[in-house]
Image (cartoon, rainbow, N blue to C red):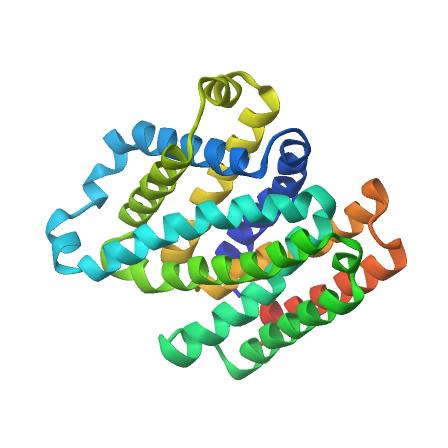
Amino acid sequence: MSTQILLYGLVIFIFSVIRPFAYRPCAKLFPAEMSSAFTSTWLVVSIVLTFPFLSHLIDFYTLKENFDCVVISIVKGIALWAGIKYSQIVNRESTSSSVFLTFIVLALGALINNLFFKESLSTAHLMAMVSIGLLGVVFVFKGDIRRTSPQAKAAFVFVVFAFTFCMVSDHLVIGKIGWYAHLAISYIAMYLISCFRGISRTDYKNIFTNKMVIAAGLVYIAGEYVIIYSSINIMPVSFVGLFTRMAAAVVMVLSAIFYKEQSIKTQTLFASIAFCAAMVVIFVK
């Protein structure tokens, strides 16, 4: 793995550790849909601010010729809206569960991309990711998700499928219509869903004045741009997913320390196994 990949991976890792802790207070204070609303609003703001500099990356003829990709980007926006909403339902009760579900997402996404959409991972890399996914399944039965409410458990399952679609859509679409067009379409679709669901004047006030909400939104935007840019220019989508899952292992241990989720021993065990499997992808060719 090159130095460039490791450098971008470190940045992705840092943002991925910070994100769930930035979002947890919002999950406690606001309804789950509010997190989707402020995330989509700040993402659209990011598109407006970057459009004068990056609009040349959008080729409208290419969009017309790849209308199926445009539809996939729109569906991704809807899936992202729903995924954030329901992940906050999980996060409200168990931060470690809200990040550990992404291990299952990584395995499903990597399998789908490699089996059906020609993402070129070696056998060792694919087996390591499948192992991480199986560990995620074990976590469902042995980890902190066991103590959560039926609503959180159902949300956990839903988010797995929503975020898996997002991962696969990145692989399918970015190479055809470009990363910036994919972002713009999916973010606008996400925001329109939020508007359809209803964003009140009080919501907008919180979105633009509440320091906690602003911080969470900015952390999400920064991490998302690095992740998407890396996916198209630096490394395979599954590698990007790998670094976010390594961060999830750290988040699990921190959650045990700060929020008393499960025991530190149990959380560290799950995190260590996941981290070791990730090392296979990084150091084995």
